[in-house]
Image (tube, one colour):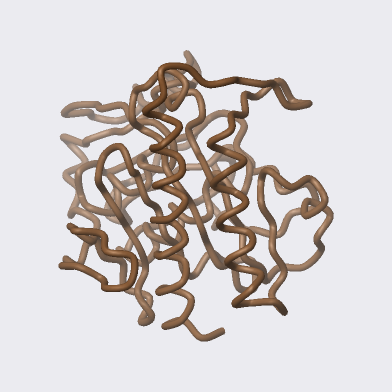
Length: 265
């Protein structure tokens, strides 16, 4: 894989998809449908998916592509592929909370090694560069010219005063019970893959997820966190979270700065 080209193309497609999403987001009303699993889908999901899938297939025709909105791609077998969630946080989008993201990742040997996470309503863009180091672009988000970048890295956590980030839409008692095992300074909530990015920038130390997610929900954020020195492990045994599973469903997991002393359930 040409990682320089991948970073450039993925970034451009994320920005183009973000424009399409924000055009619909700005409308007074938009149609919301339900998929087979009862999760919501909007015209924004579909428009963003079309832009990204067609763009990736044009530039990387020989690389397997998995995308949430195309069920035919969910039967792909292998551990090396591009994986897309064109609009992660659809519920946040519907309720106009702004915490939704465009996600494009490259998984190599079951490991997300490159990713782009773009939050168009927040004006935040996170990506792994060609060298694997994660950065945040601070604008002005020109399609062809990359703007100012700052390297990001996880915080040196104080285990007596941790900053925890949890899901805005999927918080439950099991999550609260697990968080209670830690000495917590403060908590914040965020939607979509932004939670990974908050750990990657040092704005949070740990993000536990005790709920259903799919690989397209997490791969780009996982790559950004890994490129900032962080890790994502399974909740049950603390082994690295792997990708390319038969149904693309994730187990419960913990995203964290390595300096956090993880607690067992």
